[in-house]
Amino acid sequence: MKKGISPIISVIILLLIVVAIAGSAYTYIVGYYAGLTAKVIELTSSTCSAGDIRLIVHNMGTDKITASPADWTTSGEVIQGSPLGAIADANITKPTSDIDIDGTGTFTFVCGTGNVCRTRIIVSRSVVEAQVNC
Image 1 (cartoon, rainbow, N blue to C red):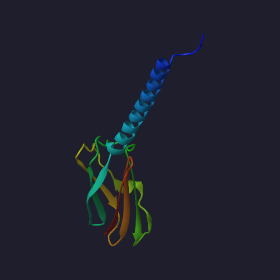
Image 2 (cartoon, rainbow, N blue to C red; image 1 turned 135 degrees about the vertical axis):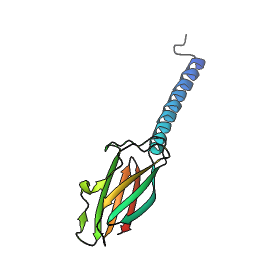
Image 3 (cartoon, rainbow, N blue to C red; image 1 turned 45 degrees about the vertical axis):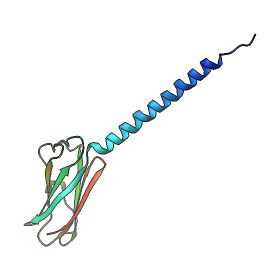
Image 4 (cartoon, helix red, strand yellow; image 1 turned 30 degrees about the horizontal axis):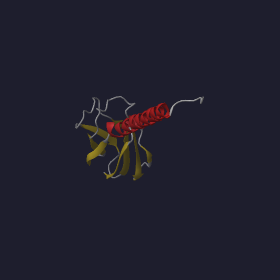
């Protein structure tokens, strides 16, 4: 008498393992790509008036971007003019309300008249950069 499992049972177990692996891979991939498209911004407009750079960004993602500082990072620097160096966070105005899906938000950077400034806004994995002459 032979001991072990029958060939039919072994095939069923192998099929269950393959289905479980495929389901896990599908769940991971869908979650990964949903995270990539959740918060995406694009630069709509960049202008300078009286030394202040005004950037308008458009939320092209599938989630709203909250007004919380945890949702975005901003930085700016004067690259030509005076004084050279980073723009202090106190001189960067961020939206005070959420940016809804397909909505816009305005960021203002104090650059200084006659200067050239480089700005950067990071939301999730989306980065918007602009170099503006004031």
